[in-house]
Length: 190
Image (cartoon, rainbow, N blue to C red):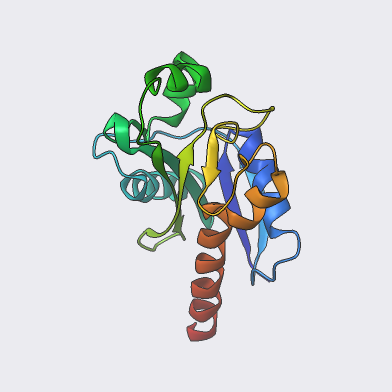
């Protein structure tokens, strides 16, 4: 069985992907290389970030690689923080985002996650998934990323209040399943 390497410096992403993939037949062994790589955020889409990241990582590591990028796009804030997740969380945190949302009626948001894959000698490909939801009125419990303020549509709790929902409903799971199906088809063709 071939091995694919997830390149990330985020402990939260590592925990999340291990939890999500624990019971999935991916068609490959997943290993982690804990490292950072350059991210071009100028086009403000998770898709573009992972395509560039996968291309850079495959050159750097000469292995089959996976990279991820996630963004929270809040309607009332014209898509902010978007792909600037790390920046927003470091600078103002979830509490700061809630201050920006104070008095706003439209709390709709979309959590978008893209996975980029590339193999040596190949072109990068991406798999994107979405989860619509809304922003809570307060930071609830402890959690990773925007889990403490994101409530998926159809539910009344944030992902940090119901961690089992995060793994089940996150776009991370949807994107990794899309990738796994594609990967298995590619393996059959080779």
